[in-house]
Image (cartoon, rainbow, N blue to C red; front, side, top):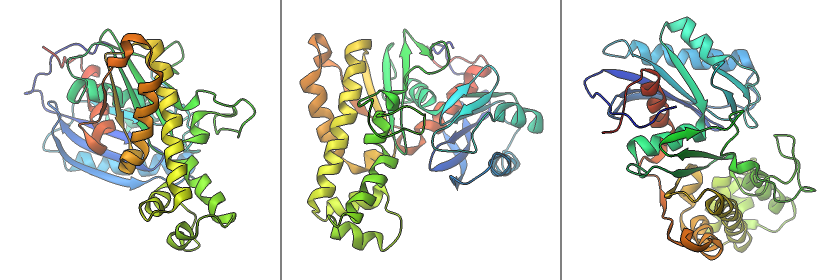
Length: 329
């Protein structure tokens, strides 16, 4: 995918859609990156393929009906393993309904608008490269820190996907081959140790073991979440603080392995876990600084400039590339 072209700002509008482990988001976006309007719906882990399709097509119907003109293309950023050639979501660890789902073909046929689909973290990397913190760099590494942990890689101005589209799957770096089974089928993946879903699991263990009374009072018999764990940490619950800090360190170890391997110009971060602030990011940065090799010591690590819209804007960049529109002078 060529990512080194220049956007014609007079072209019109595209649709960007970001389907992750927490939300399904669809937006109308101008070609220079301005979001005009968007719709958000929560993701349910119990949703079937058919229900997922109904929710997504319903969102597209609403957004297209609100458009001042017909969108020129649709970009879809989807959590999990994506076959961009077949426009299909092959597998998603966090959304069971995303299994062998020919989503791109369904949307394209129903709305008669060209569709391109890509892994959400790869799309986020493209979003940062096109509209955000990594503009002007040629070799970038992007990490999405949310329900799961993902990554995207741009090498010499090109989105690098690998032979089967697996490139950048930071969350599936194996830390402990005899550890907890990951939803991908392997064991001891980073994502089982430090991610939104891992923090929720760890919070449940802390409550069950009677180690976290503040967290238990926040959860109030509900299934605990990463947000609840952070809320307990803010109230100085020691085990909650330690859990988040350890998670930040583990994510940092995964990132520094890639930094030392790929030698990128810049590393960018996005995702809901950034809301944990320095409690998570502090240990992440510290371990990276300690373990960086040689000249990689100078590699900047920057939080997204696009906020929660990083994936949406990445999807818009995918749509622009579908139109063979360039976005760089």
